[in-house]
Image (tube, rainbow, N blue to C red):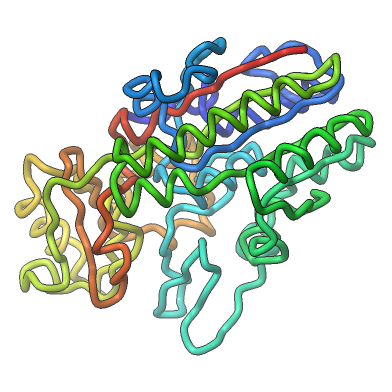
Length: 368
């Protein structure tokens, strides 16, 4: 599967939300006008996952539903940036979790916003595009982001959410209350984030008892937000990606054939960016293809770009952020790297690939 850029991906949602608020913006999702909009972003709530456990989320299951696709890779940093800019990954440059800094010889963690040896990355340099929140604020719309205090002021927040009025809120009840306050102030574009469902899926697997408990929290939050909205509001629920539970893991650092000619291993377990040593890209591609035949799509950088994985176009400045080889499992395989990413290696649930379980996300709607 390739994301349906331009006709139903997360990158198409921000423009449609602005258009619904009366701003001059494309509206590819044909959202109806509203005086104020609220987007509930649930990390890890894939459309296939929600349908499989609709009984655990009766309110969400009752809502008008359509399916969008995330961009590639199906990971938080990429999707948040698409939602924050309305651009495809190839345009905004957040092309994966762990990316090479061109010419620097090291990786950059786009989620934790960390570099080796205490170096820093300027959010405006790494992601220079204007955000939809900046546009909304200029138009006199209160642009609000409700999320835990720990994310306020981080590099990722400044890269993808600049222009928002950040409202820190910890518990589910507190987040619901802050949303209602923001939605009553006048024209508003409010986003509320919940990340614990994704965390539960990583550690115990989607569909596990803990995951289902968190899904129940999400369902309750959505119902309470919807019930407290003022007239003229549009409320949407979506996600940044879905998830699969790993049935097989391969430690790419312990298989000699997989390390030969490899300078750096980036991306994540379901969307590996493999950076080759000079002159070794062809051999690395051949080797990885042979080892993962029947289990993963393994393509060159050029093939991934030409196939439209990152969107219709990838800016020239971003090309070297992409691995010389991109390995994307289509079975339940996770390609781990325990010495560099020890926590990821012990996960149960993973995302990043182009399977329906990871790519499809819901767009649920309530109007008042």
